[in-house]
Length: 257
Ligand SMILES: [Mn+2]
Picture 1 (tube, protein in one colour):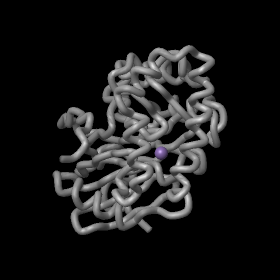
Picture 2 (spheres, protein in one colour):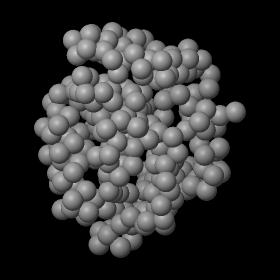
Picture 3 (cartoon, helix red, strand yellow):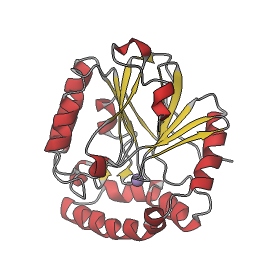
Picture 4 (cartoon, helix red, strand yellow):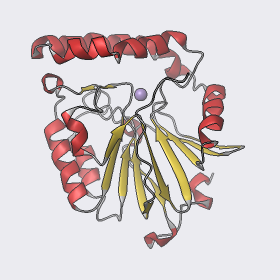
C-alpha cells in the first residue's frame, strides 16, 4: 500500500495566473529573505491569482516555534497580505520542511500539505516537491520516513530552542549526504514512472521542485516540469491562463523550447 499522503482539497477554481516557486533555501544558498519577499510582494500587481510554493523555502523549517528560521515572521505576514489581496497561497512541503501540515503555521495558507492541485489555462496541474519519488533510493526513503515519523515529531516538539538549532545543523549535514546522488544526477527514469502514475489520476502537468535544475518533458500522459531552484534562478515561474491579459503561456508555450 502506498504511504498515506496528506491529500489536499482539489477545488474546481480556475486560476487566471499562477506563480510557482521552489527551493529558495533561504539562510542557506538562498541568502536573506528580503529579496524573495520583495518578489512575492509584486505578485498581486503581476496578476497572480495563486502562488504555489513547492517546498524548501527555508534551508530548514520545522513546525514548532523554537525552530523558527530567521525571516519567518516577515514571510508569514506577507502571506497574509497576499491572501488579503486575493492571491491564494499554497505551500507544498519539501524534504527540508518538517511537520508543517497540522502545525499552527498551516492556518496561514490556503493549502498546506505534501501536494496541491490547481487548474489554469485549461491545464490541470499537480504540484509535488519531488523528494522520495525515486523508489530506488532506499537509503533516502528510509531516512525520510524516520525523520518525519510520529516519535520524532513528539521529540522535536519538546526540544528547547538551543538544542533545536543544533539538531537542525546536524540534520543539515545528513541531508547533504543523503541528497548527494540527486545533486549529480536527476533520476529521470524514476520521475517519468512517477509522472505516468500521477498524470493518470487526471492531470495534464506534473510540477516538481527539489531537483534544482529546470527540465520540461513531454511524456505519454502529459507534461513534467522540474522547476529551477529559486536560489539559482532568483525568479518566480508562471503558468498563465488565456484570460490573464498577457500573451498566453498556458498551453502551447508552457513547454516552449
Ligand atoms: Mn528538496
